[in-house]
Image (cartoon, rainbow, N blue to C red):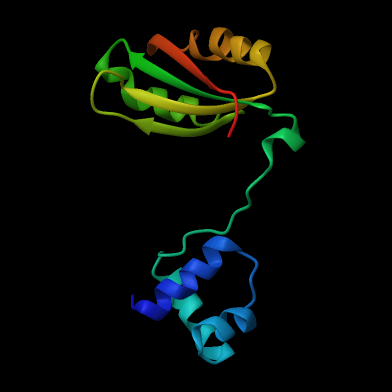
Length: 139
């Protein structure tokens, strides 16, 4: 990785659909050279995937919540992560060191949907013991 690779990555982070032609103008390399560098970044797993960023409000997911979770038994920790990350609305799942075992980032339509998620999904998980939701009103 050099400064040119970093500049290419910066362009792609801002817009994953930016063309090699547009990048070449910014980094002052030929289009084939930029394309080859991108290919190598992908091949070396520096670029692992291309994705999109959604406007949650436009998709009906107006409420963003962070949920601290404690697991009742340590043998449930890995099972919890694999079960929880496949649930609709779970955007991120972070294993923590400290007072809580996990921090979840979830997106739901409203407080009723959050209550349903907490009651019907998380509290029914055999692993979860303590749930502390925090709501994010504006972003």
